[in-house]
Length: 243
Image (cartoon, rainbow, N blue to C red):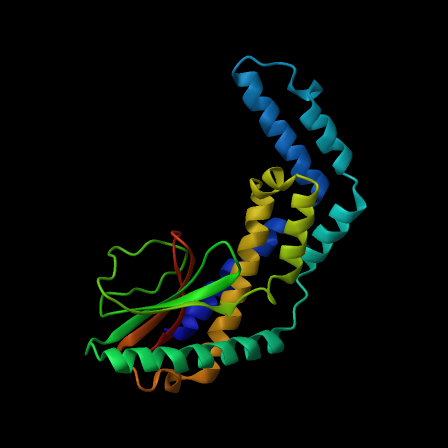
């Protein structure tokens, strides 16, 4: 099952990279202006293209700082081995703390699923849940049920920022020029963000694979033991499975 999960993540990464191949800031801005203009035309407003917003946006199409930052984000240059090593260290440290909590409370409930969930910051919390029917999710999708018992939670323990460095820098520059709404609403940016997320999950998969099931020694688990990843309140996807 773990090999199927890795294959799924690699396919999703490839699809996302395909959608951003050759993308440019010019394209994102032009698409935004065109779509906004069509919306206004549909409600009878015919002079949007003469407004301040599209005029200012058009000036940013050739902004060198925006273009260079976006180019670097598209290059996807990251130190995979270093990031995997960091993830392993953070997981070991987090589970050393989690085990103390689980053992002290001694609920006698087996752990069968873990969710790595990030929110506004690129730092994931670790949430452990009891037994249930946990499927392999090939694409981000909500579970058919909500786990009943949260056995533990470790807040903000796994830092994704080293994998997202160029994306985060691009986000900062987009916000600097107050163009973030235009950027973030685009299909191109969504594919770019997804590529970074799926790559992160692939590296986490490799970290769990390297650490092995001994990471959870001292915690009662039920197999198949599933690891998922998601943004807060968003659909999870499978990262790993201990069979």
